[in-house]
Image (cartoon, rainbow, N blue to C red; front, side, top):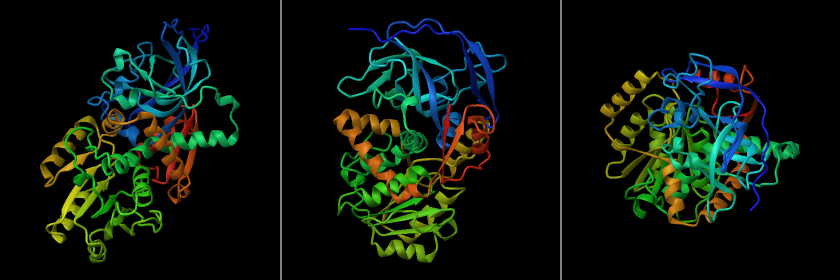
Length: 433
């Protein structure tokens, strides 16, 4: 077998975005120069080309230590002090596209575009890649340094090995920008409907018992808290428009800060959209009651303040004998120091009077792939993504495209904005590195 093309590399002049692990609102960009070492067989050198910035990135930073997200791309030891201190500083990863710049892996030739989990900088990274057998265009990073990461973050995709970024037309590039900005958070909403509340009936964590009764929405009203977020919109579109007739839900209630009508697309289930201030009002409770539910699924996508506790209390008081199931899909993107985060988690555990079942997207997808046909799954995901892109959910989203890593127009400026809460839920952010 012929080896992939090997290129002699010169020095790279780079910019990295680094974040203080103790306070993720403290961040900067660091320029530096590196001379890469020769690749070994089975290695490929890849450089970020187009990356997203979402509230998920805040989670990757705030929970980077327990979930090993900081381990994906540790700061290089060659950075100037203090930014080379791996205990104090880190590189938050982001989803998107990257380009192969050098390769000793057949099938990953120079210039190939790869989808996956990348460093937020223009740093070329050396990967140890192995092809996923039986699944077209998929690769896994297998180095020991990334063994602690969940499988979702070590799987990489080549959509078309012949595609090169420089050769794409304006329309094709725009599709990539939308995919980069929205698809990473969209897939969690898709899986919530397809796998957790679908025929596969997979537990939200990816492990444990989850019966067909648990997964059924046939006799349920779904309440989506923080419903204007992109993951929440994905779930709404899939639950209201993408289910078979008779599978439910009986109704879909969206709770948002704006209470905008038309937020949830018209589909097979009745829908209602209300503001937080009206979520427990009599008219809202009457609407739920009119659907005659035997179960209420409360999907929390990061409701503000005490809204989850307040809404659960109102539902429990009104619907005695009706099962109330709470699924935690996201968190409020409030910035906290490591100490504040620990205090917040402890306080939440003490104050909660009900179980909030936390969704683990990686665990759900991995279980789904083990149980079924991987090719069929990814084909279904692509088709569902295409349908979502054509839905009314996307028409209200605004693509905000930035350039580079440093400065107000780069990832650095976006990080400041998202940390300060200045990015609205209808804005989708992508950066051309």
